[in-house]
Image 1 (cartoon, rainbow, N blue to C red):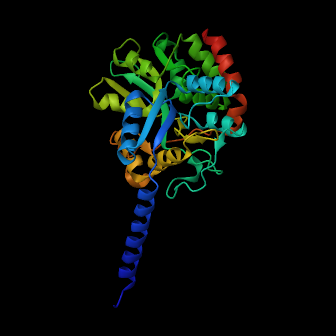
Image 2: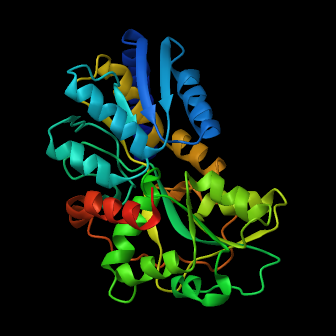
Image 3: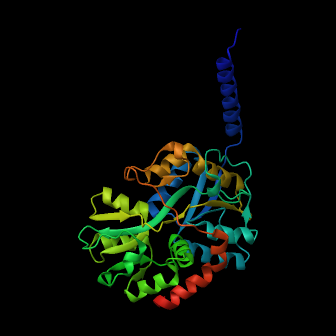
Amino acid sequence: MNLTRRHFGMLAASTMLAVSLSTASAQPVSGKLVLYTSQPDRDAQQTVAGFRKLHPNVEVEVFRSGTTEVMSKLAAEFAAGQPRPDLLFIADAASMEILKAENRLEAYKEAKVDGIPSGLIDPDRTYFGTKVISTGIIYNKAAKLIPTSWADLAKPELKGQISMASPLYSGAAAIKLSAVTAHPDLGWKFVEALKANEASAVRGNGAVLRAVATGEKAYGIIVDFMAFNAKQQGSPVEFVFPKEGVTVVTEPVAILRTAQNKAAARAFVDFLLSDEGQKLSLSQGYFATRSTVGKPSWLPAGADLNLMPVDMKGVVKTIEDDKKRFATMFGQ
């Protein structure tokens, strides 16, 4: 048989696929997988359904809440010596960095991360960014002023018209707080200006969206996909990427060292990082970490993310003090 290089490559690929499928069928994952996540309910349900379509023998138990509450619950379980989750899937890398420093995370060196920017993956492979979510400004179409920058929210004519997610509940809001307060042109004076402008801090991004969409508030600070998805569904809102830049969270996933079902946990990570998992993220309205799967349908033509510099290790050092200072200011 005379094999060309192309034929040889196809034959090799077929053989590797057959071996891979044989190995997968010989060692299917099963049992119970406990997942703690801050994903919105709909996304969590779709993600679990997508995973179980590939691994129907795995029963997935989900605890879902805001990142801060998930972390508080986990901390209490650590203190009691009874951590329950196999897998943690939350909003921000800062929380993962804290757990990594405490030696709570399991390294997964074999995870397939080809094509994912290195900045979205922990170099030691203890956690993996699954998407890119920015925080910017949403406003109701009836609003008199169209904001272009974070500084616009401090203008007196916006007094009493601003809603924002509390960093005591939202991981994305906590990252934004630490990044903004470290920004030379914003700092704590910007947060103080929001307080003086009677901005309201609510439980999560969903509450911000409802307030702005209904006209209860004219402006809000919110994650991008929620605003754009609402707009696509007919909600009277617009979204702005502020000119000073936006902060991002990567919704990282990690396996705990105390996981009871590490095989299923690794399979879940594999699913999230695969093209299939990334396409699911895209269909849910997010920027995927693998640019090869495409961009969100809501992204305006020519739009580009101007990322605000964030020193994640610095954030880890200041985030708890930042949240305490915020709580004192806003009476939470």
